[in-house]
Every structure is written in C-alpha cells, then in structure tokens.
Length: 93
Image (cartoon, rainbow, N blue to C red; front, side, top):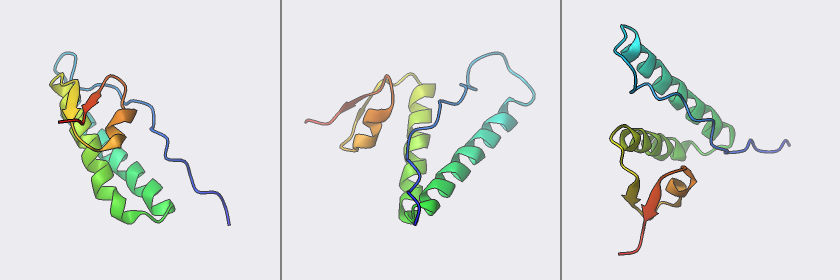
C-alpha cells in the first residue's frame, strides 16, 4: 500500500482579473476554474475523501472572490483559511 498524496497548496494561479480587456479573458477564467476543480476532485478521490470536495472548492471560490475585491480578513472558525498568504482570519468574537 502506497503513501497518500500530500495536500499541499498548489502554486497561486495568475490573477486574471487584472490587465486590459481581452477577447479570451472570460474563457481563460472558466478554464482555470475547471482545472482547479479537477485537481481538487483528483486529490480528494485519491485519498478517499470525496465528501471534502465540495467544501474544498467552496474555500477556493471564497478566496478568489476575496482577492478580487481586495478583502484581506475573514471571520471564520475554518483553520484552512490560515494557509493563504496575506489573509487574516478573525475567529474570536
């Protein structure tokens, strides 16, 4: 029996929300989202954690929206947000 694959965070994708308008910009964003989802599905299926696919993809989407709007902090008890550079998690009320 082999060792389970690591769950390290992949390198940050390029920020497609900056720069001039381009005819293929929206298409590139959709392709990137699909690739991220496919990678999440592949990794969590490999370690038999299919139930975690939805929550993992939701975190990726949350962070993408936060970056787009320049949000630097989040009120959450989810420790996975601590892994993202430049994001401060506020968890004490």
